[in-house]
Length: 214
Image 1 (cartoon, rainbow, N blue to C red):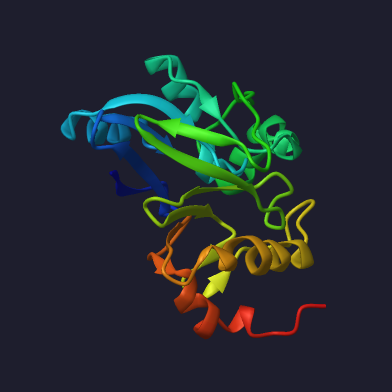
Image 2 (cartoon, one colour):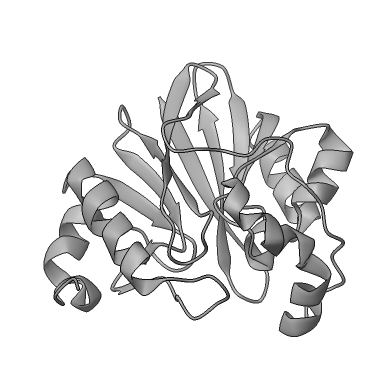
């Protein structure tokens, strides 16, 4: 069974997710945005074997601890889609813009594409390319667990911003309506910020999804 613990990090209270297979104790940190010591302690306290670092997109508050964790643990950085490469190149500028500690640029070990599958112990998650917030944003979905990690695509009562470079509002709505919501109303999703929700709840109550799609 796939299990998780949400670990809010950085002043932006970004939801880093500690995700693991309870059969093997193999774990991944999804969007380790900062506070490396806190994240490593959470892994150790849970008695887990951290093997991978997964990124939904290239914004600093989602990737800020990834390279340090890679250096400390040897775990590969996986994701997002290569269309976000320019965000990783711009990490020094991002850190200055948002008032974060200086962050050097880095390159993930593996870029992801629509239809890729990631294995975590005995569990498998599908990769969905969901651009709009950023052009290379991806979502991780476990059909068995009915769980999706959606980064900044969709929130409880809201959707991701599209006013950043290469953001696209139409692309974002298309990804939500044609890739995420069809996964099923019962699917629980963990957003990049704020509380969890289900696709069914957002489909009927989210004001941004009740507007016409142009």
